[in-house]
Amino acid sequence: MIVVGVDGSQAGLDAVSWAVREAELRNEELRIVHVMPAWPLEMTEDAPHAEVGRWMRDGAESVLADGLERARREERHVKVESLLLPGDPRSALIAAAGDARLLVVGSHGLGGFRGMLLGSVALGVAGHTACPVAVVRCPPAQPCGEVVVGVDGSPAGAEAVGFAFAEASFRGAALRAVHAWSRPTAGGGLHASADAEETAQEARRALAEALAGWSERYPDVKVTEHLEHGHPVDVLRDASTRADLLVVGSRGRGDLAGLLLGSVSHSLLHHAACPLVVTPASATSRRA
Image: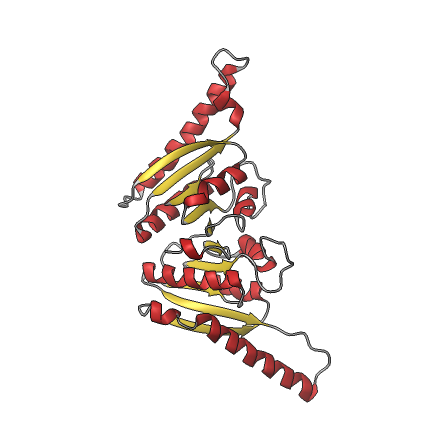
């Protein structure tokens, strides 16, 4: 099951289009979910301001109907259902994704301040679910034929690698595995040069170890190893301009203990140039 959240915004409808195509690739059913405050659903017809509650319920049903219509327009062979849920959008979507293989949301929704690059719901669910979260931003008009994955050697990064291999196989796409490395150095000279070369060799080993065994599981996926000196956000953002999908782990090695979303994945949620999937470290049993 793939779950996609809608809120009446264009970004939400774009997420539906992306999600229904993803569901067809994975041979999964699609559930379109809209979340509204609980009180209009709980109030009786004779309650004060009952007409306001009816208006809000009608609006919510309209949002779901628009989502279903968008899914039908994609003309995909996917079973689609809709569900209206009460509560806070973030907590309700996290709960709705409890048995899902993938949660899909738009990059921004209604009610946000103009100029904000990412909606509070998208930011609030990424890194907080047991399944991967796809944030649909800037879908390419034409397929690029490449999936990009950020590799950092962390547990969540390992899940990202597995998800990316599977996704590339589903799409018949190539996979670019990107590892960015940097090491601050003081001064220069021979010692600095030797340190840089040692760090580069460590980065090569880390990339090779992260990819070990995956090509045997997915022999149909052509893999390009991309090692680059630079900040991971900058390197991955640049790679995303030529990709159909960017996949990263929710946390990297350098993030503070207790954080659910790392600094790199957080930045890419705002700045990736294509749809982004954030994988949690616990996603092994849910990966396709």
